[in-house]
Length: 272
Image (cartoon, helix red, strand yellow):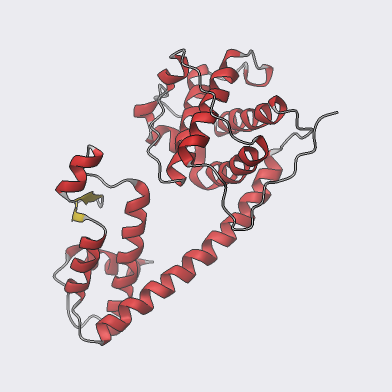
């Protein structure tokens, strides 16, 4: 008879671990996991299995604004990872994040997009990806003596709840940003001046033709590349959409901003 699993909750809604702590802990579990002959994944290509594990761990790091950068070769480097994380907290975190990763992010799409970090070079069955991830979650539960086996259906129900909650939060944030920029425009500030101020705040140097955001030189040298990390780019993108919407609503197409990315966002929203 195993331990009862009860989802972890804290008063402030936060967990007492950094994203890197969680990722190091999961890396240790992943190394142990691949060393076992798991019957449920025996017919799945090991390159696919390893790619899913690595991508899922990196995804969790990304959600915590951590560039963990785990590669499949790292699973075989022989190094031990003994990061201590409360198993109830760890399981609660991964079942919630991985539910969203599985059904919104798309495991196959994510693995192939990040294939420079794995050895998976072609599409694979999405069901295989889901089997690996779910088995890994249940492996961690069993390793910690929890009397609980998670199912795809259970993760999907979690995803639906999270999706609705995220959409409501994103709508609220968009309306707040739109109101903020609308007030600035009404007070006589130009849209181009507003954009320049936002760009300085977020260390945005330029937007490439492919739509990627790039840091200023001083930040680029610090992080080792110029393209923004996904979490920073997402915040900038939200700001630009909101200011473009506020401008178009007030301007009604009478004037065209000099800032090209604002024009592109306005045209994009008109097509929706």
